Amino acid sequence: MEPECVDGRPLPTPPHRGEGVASCMWHDPAPSTGPAPSTPAETRLWRLLFPLGADAHHFRKQAPIGPYVTDFACHHARLGIEVDGDSHFTGAGLRRDACLKGEGYVVLHFTNDAALSNPEGAYASILTALQETSHAR
Image (tube, rainbow, N blue to C red; front, side, top):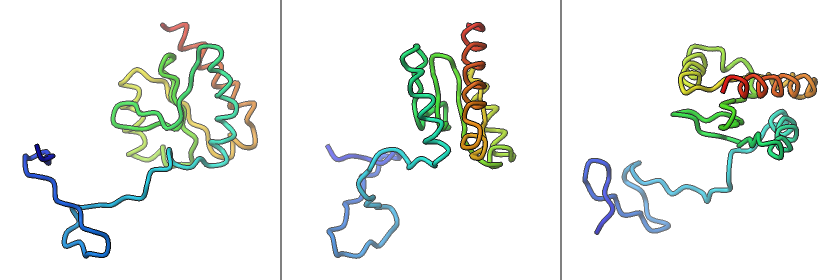
């Protein structure tokens, strides 16, 4: 049986290498190399979060929640963590946070600068949030 598009039409046959592509329906992506590269701030925070898995607070990188993907999430504690600039405080970012909260998640935001210059403060905030979410359950 031929694979089909959502609307029931057959998928287009991929072109052979060297042949032109008449439409944008076919995309030949580069091989996947895993999750998106981490910023230095995300890498620094991950080094703090990873050991918490030994204490039953397993965090995932690039974790899907509903239609969105958070930088880090502990699904058991329903905690999402974002390391970013001001992009999450725009209209789209606020809608995203509202959706994540609607899924039952607490969302913490850390600027790149805060994660790099004050990782101890970020870590303390995360530990507090983990304690609060586990008491709420």
